[in-house]
Length: 468
Image 1 (tube, one colour):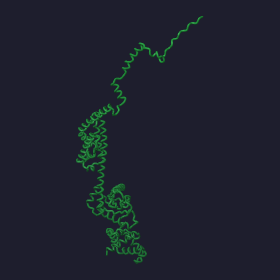
Image 2 (cartoon, rainbow, N blue to C red):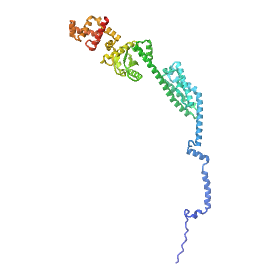
Image 3 (cartoon, rainbow, N blue to C red):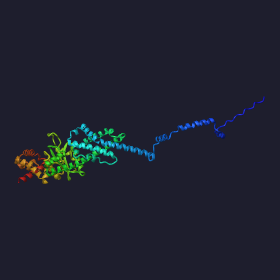
Image 4 (cartoon, rainbow, N blue to C red):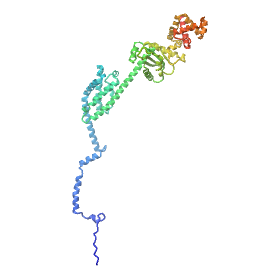
């Protein structure tokens, strides 16, 4: 049976490989599809305005570009316009703000209410000057402003004594609070943040200005007080103390202690102001009143008992030891205790004479009482020491009877020997011993002590010279 003829297969054409396929004309259906697709793509394309807005949002203008420069100029113009409007409103509200600040101080600050009218008026002027200075500073914030001169120059220098730094801070805080509360009312629409930032910066500047004013006042007052204090100390040392010294000492804060002494020694090298300040710190710690000064090479300290109880024991040596660390190496002499500041002249002169004569007693304690240096002072020519030795030793012994003077003289001549003195006086040694105890009771000096025996011998010699 004959085989059936095979069907011819139709070859499949691949458009990607067949060059003829790409050159064939498109069918009507595909042409219509393209006609419908193109307008739709065009409709989806954004307009020019939308493209500009999208471009502005997607990428900010570069600084320096024409479009960026225009935006910056427009922003700066708007900012300057808001600043000018706020400035005008601030100028109109300055008087109202000053009145509100003064009223707030009168309401909240008790120290302000209790001040004399003159001081209150000065503080009111300071508050007004502060707000006026802020207005001017807000007008030209980039220009340097002398805030301390603008604000505090309206008040006299004496106001820094009447108003403390703490009170000034409270006054400034109150004024700033009043201005901050009025920002929303004073600032132009949109300028609130700029005015609030300006208030914060100005508050910082006025705080620094306040500290500077009080620091300058403290330095000037400290320099004046130091000169005044040195003048008081020098008057006491030279013997020119009068009622004016009391008034000057009162201006320095000196109380009225009824027990006063003068401590004197060598001044340390370095800044004298630092030495004086160190003395003041030590005196506050020891609860002592002091007036001090560096006079040449000497450091002089007038010490007053800081205790409030009159019966409190005031020992001069421990009091001097509380201050002795501020003196230079060498002797430190304590003058006798006196009853008031005017009488401190005697204590100062005794301390000065003792400091001069202390070289004759190399083993003297530190500090040493000026009365313990009476024999050395007398030998150095101090008339006060000579008079004191005669009045406190020779005269009482002479008035007690010749037996005490004779016994003391023989005892000292016999090298402090009881038996030798008894033989020379033709008495029993117990009699000599009894008379020497009487000498101690009368004078306060024990003949058996080497140092006391030296003082007694000088006193006897001076008394005999005076008696002729």
